[in-house]
Length: 110
Image (cartoon, rainbow, N blue to C red):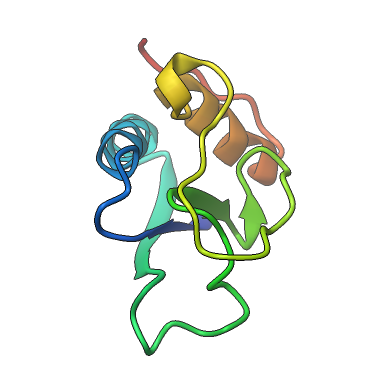
């Protein structure tokens, strides 16, 4: 069985975090049990969050440490907007990115 770690980076008050989390959870539900997905949620404003990831915008999805769209890390704490779909990644985009990391094509319901 394929395994992948998905990190959801966010901070409270970011208006797009909730919708992004919802799309991520929907993608995970559709991919499991074929793909074992370990989900880690990281509050970017938490004092315990490592400095190495504090400068990602909220929300950000990392798949095995790689950003969902291939975007580089930012230079400060900020809300980020993804292209299309009202500023958040779609369920299909998230599932496809997870599949790419694993070297396979995945299909999900829209």
